[in-house]
Image (cartoon, rainbow, N blue to C red; front, side, top):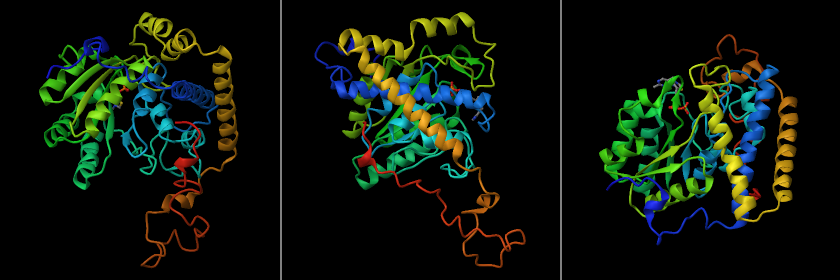
Length: 376
Ligand SMILES: Cc1ncc(C[n+]2csc(CCOP(=O)(O)OP(=O)(O)O)c2C)c(N)n1
């Protein structure tokens, strides 16, 4: 089956699932995109104050891709995010406070300062902890969705890969296996033009990533990744197909990485005019604001109220994160050795009071209650 390129190819009979969303959900999409951007901007300020430990990864210009796709999932579905999918994790229930504590390596962050940035997961909320090796989460998600199929669970998996990750063996093995097994998996290739300093033209000889769907025998679709309603529409269709037992989809989101690989990268290899053009003409939030104001007839004051709410939430989370403690050195041992020890403690543990730590997970972590969330 030839991959579909864009919405127009569907014909008049096919409704646009994004446009069909009610206004509350459309405003929800705006909230999540604005929250993603504001939270990342706050992290940049903290990074410059040397309060962030390790690297800082931006998704500037890719907020629609992350938010619109995660929005197409149900609570019971599982997604596997990457460093540019902060928005996906927020939609799935990760909180700004957790993100800030992670980036600042605080002792009561989800990983207790033992991992950094957005490298953490919670299967209860439906996002898996990410790892750095590119493409490796595709076979992992093939395994996750295989369990859904074997147990007869009505659940779908979604995995993100960058254009660079498509060049790995793991990507190929994972998507091929999932395709052959007919697993309920959506594979999203975020084509943002660059993989570190490698442009897409040096990544693949294929004209477009969506063409790879033909080789794997799966459904494929390419979409404007900076149009949040189109992203939702395309992802929802793939999710519905997966849920209906129609197997794997490969979706290519056309977007652009407006910042360097991470905050330390000065992007000297990216043509400045290219970055400026995407910022001026194709910012996903600017574009969506125009849709809400002009087509949906939303009042500017309604958007201002969402912006103010986002700033309040990020301010409160920043204060709480800054007030939280750095990890206790003994935390590094928690969950590594049996407690109480089966053997006499190692010399450096003797006399150490780790009893107060008690739990493998930090206080409040893993106790998130989906039913109490206001939005989504
Ligand atoms: C197998 C593997 N090779 C190399 C790297 C180093 N590396 C980390 S991110 C990155 C670029 C990723 O580009 P892409 O997959 O397009 O995602 P993007 O950063 O553009 O979102 C590279 C080469 C890695 N993490 N794993």
